[in-house]
Length: 551
Image 1 (cartoon, helix red, strand yellow):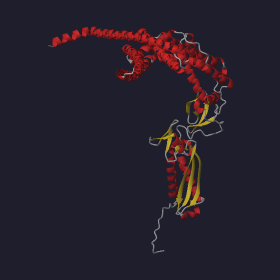
Image 2 (spheres, one colour):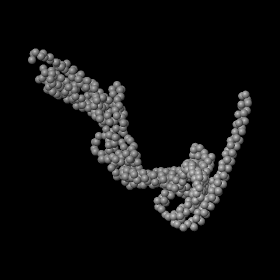
Image 3 (spheres, rainbow, N blue to C red):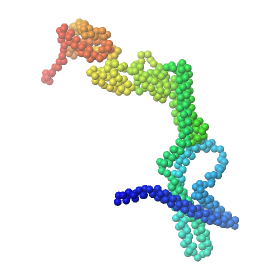
Image 4 (cartoon, rainbow, N blue to C red):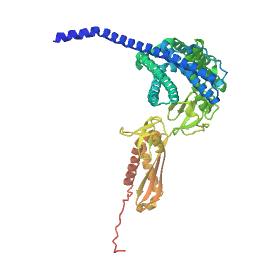
């Protein structure tokens, strides 16, 4: 059984193309028969319409009243229109087109708007050609639906008239009804002919249509086969213009000394701007010239549409482009060598170009920004000793939250500190600047308060501060901090509630910023050593309790 089934399948596979070809030929034969029958029906209908037209003309010549002439004239015009439509349908079915397409168009008067629109007419025609089959099928389906609705009405009217003719006994009424019946029969024949013509055309389109993917790929293939060479030529022209523009730019930088300066003069900037604008215009017009020379009006119209779109966009943004040109020429609101505030940071404008260079000299930040980002800003001349950033890398700082660390990273977004021991803390740029960082790198001061008891009141203002200052200075030298000590003072600070406070003020170089807390502890230690050596009593916090009854 398995062998038998295999043989049967092989036979079917071998003869399946022949079967498919036979079915296709049968369908084509049936379609051809329907077409010939429709053509015969059209000829009969045309002969009938011609007879009616002749009869109507004779009746029109013998008409006596104006109303009768007007009625007959309308009937004659309708019959002539139906005859023309029938002939056109005959031509469409028989030849697949209409002879009217070959007739010359009438000469039209000049219309400026139409002439402008005619420039983009090739693109519209190309799009219409792409969708012609789809639109034609849609129109035919609408016509089929319309005539399908009208046909039952005509048949009902013929049936009603036939019933009335069979039952009437008046010859005058019968004669009038017969004329009316003949008109309705002609209308039914006309509707059937229109319906058949539309259906046959739709069947032909559907039988010859391909899938959307195949039609799209076929169209794209034919499009690039016809126009690929022109597109390649246009691309080569653009590349040639860009290469030539680059060579001219390098030649100008070599031959014109001021071209290489960091801050260029107005004339050099104007020359550079003219060169860039000319390059842009040539890049846009070059492909259009190619398409014009090869007379490819579709590609030329597409280029024209792109150019119109660019012009429309330029019309909307022209004021902003004008400001950008002013900035490029260094005559706008932002100028080279001045200072601006951008993203919360001050920047020095190092160079203005289509991509301008901004730098922060202290933070050592550099960024390139588009010229458009500077349009809404204003710069001002640099002031002497103006601050740029609270610190540099490797500086030790103290934040408002008490964090002390060395700056190891600065970017436009983040600042990273490393604390003693290696822990790192990162701030956003806004939080860092908002934290009011205290920079220890230049120099810094330490103020430590030391208290003694009221028993030493007589010595607290002069003698004890002098002895304490001498002891602290000696210990600074012994522990190796003397060469980086800028100033040392010990003074009486205040009479506190339970102590007499003496303040030690020490100024150090920024090199000791990493030892800030160690120096504070050392000063407290040296104060305690001095108090022990000189027998100064150090007070402690006293708490007095009172009973309620004692008062």
